[in-house]
Image (cartoon, rainbow, N blue to C red; front, side):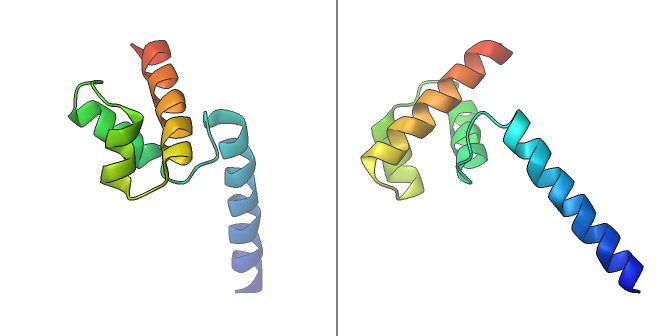
Length: 75
């Protein structure tokens, strides 16, 4: 049982390491913001993210930048 917990902890550490390398931002709301961008077909703004995610404008602007950059590179 202990080895299972140790392996699980090791996998969680690996996932966190990979997330840091792969994710365009460390913000936990990135995927929610990305989902909104897809829902609104890319026609989003920082203020829309601010309202829909109930966050401050500065954070919304950072998410907006990350999401729109990500959408441009994927598209």
